[in-house]
Image 1 (cartoon, helix red, strand yellow):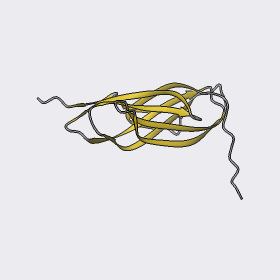
Image 2 (cartoon, helix red, strand yellow):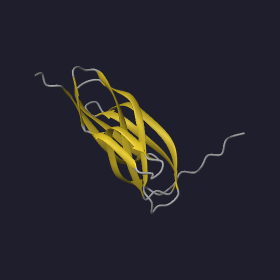
Image 3 (tube, one colour):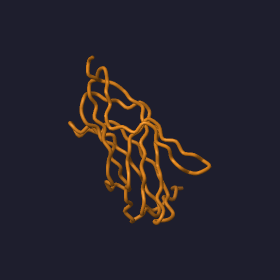
Image 4 (cartoon, helix red, strand yellow):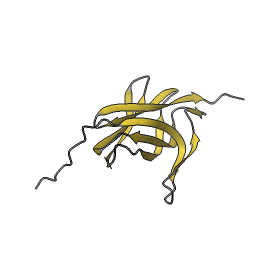
Length: 138
């Protein structure tokens, strides 16, 4: 017997913010999210390297069932290095929702720009980037 699949929403959500940080934590008593160490640049002693990080997203005007996908893309080659997909249900278009993901160490093959592209039901919503550079020698 086939499992019933929830139909995807036709409402296109709005991505208010996407931020890269060291850690994103939710306070269960207030539902507030604290972002620690927001950044858009990584300095490395050598490449390739790896870096753990968190990705925070604030979404509004969403109602119904969504497949949210985040693609980690190397801009120079436009290749997808990693990605994550998850299903979310949003009940009220008038409320915004905070989503955050703690990512395992992501590969950074070389210097350059890397982007976290946010998609909902295969529709591109927006992105955040990081620039990877060699640490200057002192």
